[in-house]
Length: 152
Image 1 (cartoon, one colour):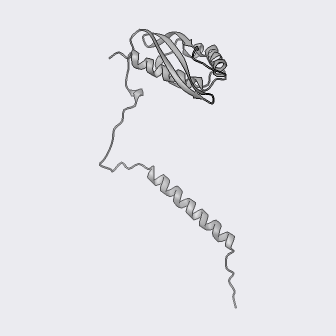
Image 2 (spheres, one colour):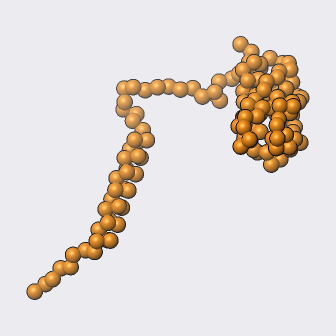
Image 3 (cartoon, one colour):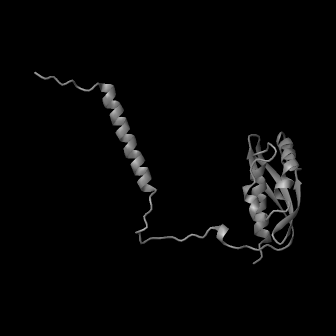
């Protein structure tokens, strides 16, 4: 007489959990797949593929950003020549609390990352001299300056 042993409850639960995980992952991957046969197609053009020219001049904007202490702002003034930043000034008078010291650190390291660069390259500015949140306000100000300086 052969006896078969019923699987242990824990093994059944692990197998069921694994099957459920595989099913969820399969659905998620399927939802993100390429549906190139679809008749509803949308063509998008990224900003990187569009040549934008900028008017020479000096432009200013204020960029807001959020810190643990609340909303802060940093003022940014750039001078552009042929789309290249030739001068940069920061207005840190908006800063309150510890943000003032972080903006000071940011200001101490930003010139070397910006002066002589195309304004289009400034979207990649991240943490500067230990200040990571200030760059968010800086990038918002640069976006406004790009919009203001766009020749068109």
